[in-house]
Image (cartoon, rainbow, N blue to C red; front, side):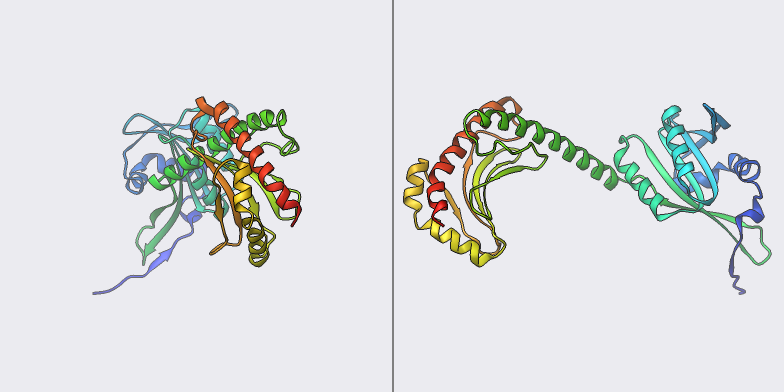
Length: 308
């Protein structure tokens, strides 16, 4: 049995002109694209006008959704990426396909990002095209998906959206809490709202801070002890812990004393059960309880912090 050897064929030897040759060939041979995408495509029109631009091919999938196909027998560039997004938005396409001979890594990453960000019913494909022959056989095109939609990408997109929404919620929560707190204590008066799940103010000694912390379903107030070295943090913690009974007496209840063991930082904290970020209808009560607890925590600890 004789064995042939695959030979890479320059694409311009097959299709000299991208628009007149390659796009015309692809319009009549969408089955090559169907095989790699594992879906049926029907051609609607070539060179579809979108304002002063024109999309190479407009097709539709098996569900009748518009599909944009843009061809580039060269290395990917920003111009074609921008056009694809323009075509997709103006033609209300659910699928965008970018066919290229040389995908740049930066554009591959951009397509991954688009698939994470776009709505769940849309998809963006980056497809590499090559051509091979064996001996004197006719050249055969090879299409390979470089980047495309996936369940994992959509899940990542959902997670990013949820994270962004939580950031906005935290900003609003801290804004409301800080406005209330200013009328009752000056401790966090110079602090700005944050997208993080905590905000803090200095406790009067280097490396010590009073912090508000919020999670989805609970909140807490705490003293954070972190001077950068576990040994120093433990020494400060032990000095405060030696006055535990008096401190908790002024605070009005027990506190959690978390000594650094497998971590550098030490904490003295108090958790509240009124609710958390997810309970927007109870934010005023939660914020009031947090401010009350912070005032009591500062009053209880400050005299001993000053003696350090």
